[in-house]
Image (cartoon, rainbow, N blue to C red; front, top):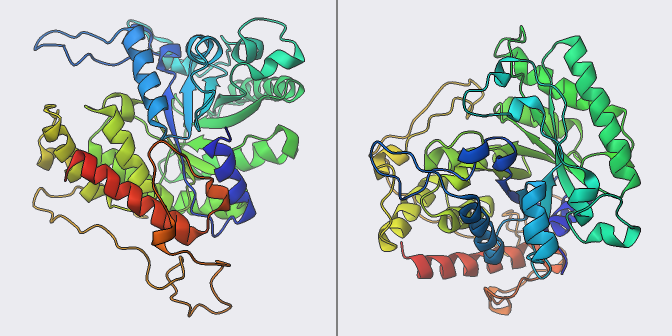
Length: 423
């Protein structure tokens, strides 16, 4: 089965300024960083007691999200990939692309009692590419397609010469091995994990310049298929995506926060040019991960606003008899400070009115120009919604659909979800 990731990357590169495709990844690789606490707090925990989910429960949640078929990428540890992908063949008939964390530098060693995070990040790789691709060392060429053929590689620039040179040399060695073995990667660039001498206004520029400078020396065969970075606001995002339209930029979700934090982060980053979002803790800490992912997709498809999604998500929880961690008015508060050019913090008051579901763009033109845009709309043909059918068990070939057909399909999908969960 052709993967949605490949379809969306092809569409973005074919029309960098016009494609509306958006990539969503579930980052379930936390066991390579957090240890016992990686699966998240168990819903069975009681007051005064902290109980974590087991690794088996964590992996079962992965199975459920893969069967749901909404995200484009499932990022896992090498050991989880070996079980679910290589042994169980979970992804064989799935539109979702399996991926594995390809390195675990010291700044992800988040262990209880550890002090590693106080030190500048140092390169390290637990996993081998062979283990990710086939489950053992020395894969044969035929075996390299048994496992994951996509990995996340993480870089942390500290603004310290020795540490940054070591990180860049390790990345070069990884790229060389990956290219020889036919292994693709996406690049995660973290902010400095130690004092760097950079103030708030300098940090986004530092990160953007490091990305542009680092990739300038990499030929297409060795380049990452997309980026995963901290969202530093509209100005920094627009600067990076306009520098190279074929540099597919994605944002990382960060800490758990409120539901509105997650939904608004996706919507705002997409508005200013992001083409991907990778959420780990934000999905894993959700009261109902499957419903949370559904609403991430609806927001990415621009079918509902973040505010409406929060309200609808709480309606789903009520219907499923799941107690929310926060009251609705608290879950509608924004705790981030990078949603505007000014970088000022903001929150949504509890009295915010419920917005209406956005209607499809007017006219037969999917861009909304109603046929009046100079030079005409980019769509070569239009499709009546009556010609589009939504079947939750069948994935359409989005690469062969016009934007109007995609909008019609997603509207039917939205109606199906709301009918299933209730509003």
